[in-house]
Length: 444
Ligand code: BES
Ligand code: ZN
Image (cartoon, rainbow, N blue to C red; front, side):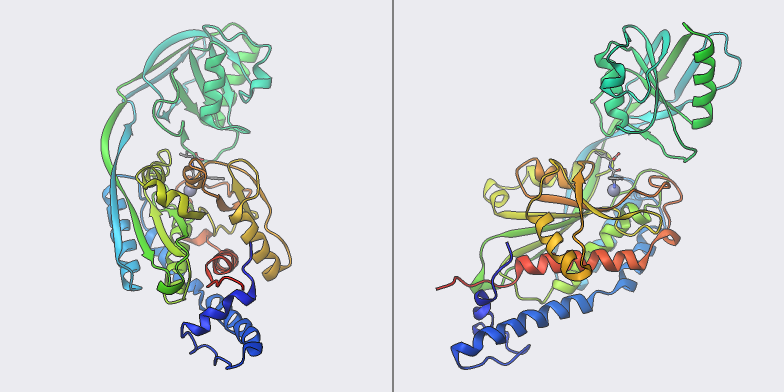
């Protein structure tokens, strides 16, 4: 994986000798090249400017940046302008997506229950008007549903363990005609099924407090009937944008490989998205800045994706429009999503199959070198790396685990961002990238 030092002789021959003098004798080449490599490595690590990342997060997180909104357009213009200012020719790639407009009628009525519940819209739920006996279905994991007959019933589910969409799909498979999911904590998270057309029964979301009221009532009053009514949701065509800056490889040593560093720039409604994901966007900008004039044998694409929060749409669009030849030349996708939260745990990586790949190997080597500890990885596909993995590209997400409790809420603001975390992730990722892109020459 790691390129051998001997292979770096060509760096000097190509004239990057401003960093270190080229020794005339072959025997001296190796030590000279070690020095060149080390010099670039130090140069990269030392040029990381955490204040600049922090300032970019501050700027981006002044408003939410919902895909297709004017605020997203403003963020896209800002990202493009920054990348242009580093000397890149930056492309804005626009694409259509279907936007969900929340229903105007959202009702839940519980037979003989006097308390007033405040149902919340579950993003992407279909409209529907259904009645049935309510059945408590735990967190909706298949093993919990094994012995339940939900045919014609409304499932009452607790948030947690698995995604909202998985819960709804699991109870649908068991015959349920409607789903009510309640929060397991008092956070103001919005409920979302991730994307359109995944589910076929109406679903609503309740706060923890309302959920517990209903749960207690249902436990004490078995065979209670519930009616759910959702009307007026719409899907509307909208446009979002990917911002792409490309760094060409150094001509004579072009190995035709491509590395993609990406992050999504959009946020969910109401969330300023300082951590999710102005942090990853700012880090992508910073990596583009510090790598701009570093000689490499690999092409690097820095991409800020749009419409991640509505179903990984920007990254899917990007991958889908790539010619086959380019897909086969992309050796790695580094996905930076939520990389700066004060209140989250330690850095981890996520791959869609929980297996190691070039990205995890590079990052484990880099983190061991920098901190004496290899960044661990586990399974996860809730971000843009999944679009790359889908077509066989080695891809991993960089994120802190566990995530902060204010994720996807209005409290995702700049005051929760840690400069130390930003610095740590930027070091690990930039060193990983450098070890992959540094100039390589065939050994004799
Ligand atoms: N940054 C999150 C993903 C995330 C959050 C991963 C916490 C791990 C821990 C991302 O922006 C997101 O919210 N993704 C969606 C999924 C997507 C398919 C719409 C999600 O997780 O709901
Ligand atoms: Zn995110």
